[in-house]
Image (cartoon, rainbow, N blue to C red; front, top):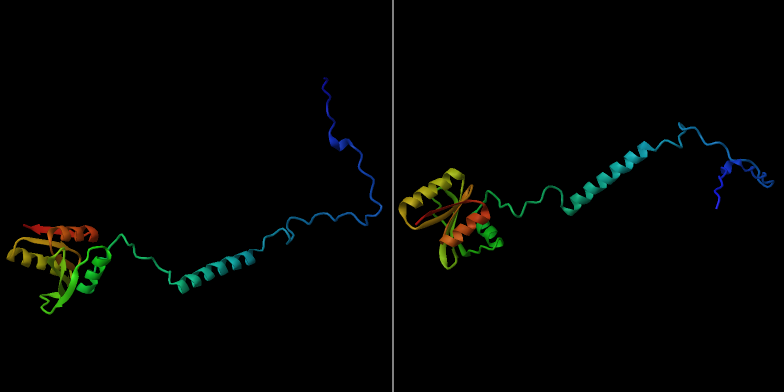
Length: 176
């Protein structure tokens, strides 16, 4: 086979004009013509509308604001009952909670039963009161197993109290 060079296609004659065509197409508009510019105001308006609609929807669904991290326990509790309820939701049940009238520098105190043994639960005004509770208990009885949080303390059986400290990311102290 011999190779033949191909002629470019533009060398062909143009087709004859169509007698039925009325006029040729007009030239394209210049680049600065409004047809070539994007409708910036319209796009910005639509974007703002989408953002506002999303915010309204989020408010209506109650989803605005960060959800608390379930893996991170709260640092403060308003009452011993709130602490016991939270521990129960985390799988550390303390049954038969009863509030105690004698608060001893506490916001609230109570008793319950975990792993078949009595548990003391206290919520205090601040961490210094929690430390004072540890000092008072440590000097008066043994054995002592406590989990100490920012404003709360739990005194109960060793294994259960150690698990409370782990789940709550709190201090565990023992005086056997």
